[in-house]
Image (cartoon, rainbow, N blue to C red; front, side, top):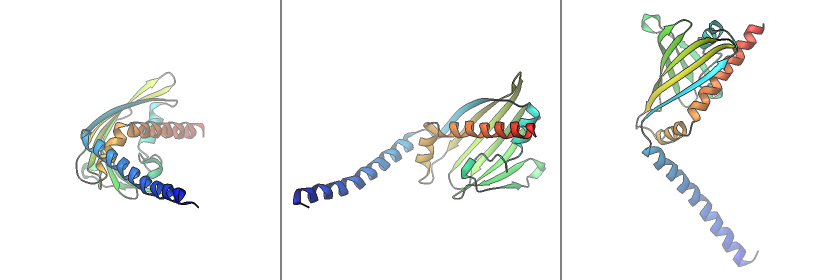
Length: 183
């Protein structure tokens, strides 16, 4: 290999890691500049009656909010007997606690991550329709300063990853509810 080719190869081998470090730094700074508070809404029509959707929403082992990241779900004992569960996501765990329940129309729960300083409240409304059930979910929460994860989580939420994850979760709840109804 000639000297100019070696020189070019060395420059490329130096600039690729420098560019990657710069990209991570930019994403970190953008994430830090985003607001702590977030809110979003997802709505989906599910082709089963509200009672079937309600039952599916109360089965976190079959329908974890963490989706494929979830490695396990355990039910938690809560004072006053409210429904609560923990999802093990590997690097962290998220605790969920039902704070309002009006079967089969409204379900609200709060969630708190044990690693990332993130918490949120989700309010689910179920409305009967001619085709089945319209589910509307409103989420409000915050990701406070704390760990190196924070800017990346804020950026992901700002770019719509949480909204898409919630929509995917509702899709799985709907598919499983339809399958259970067909049996």
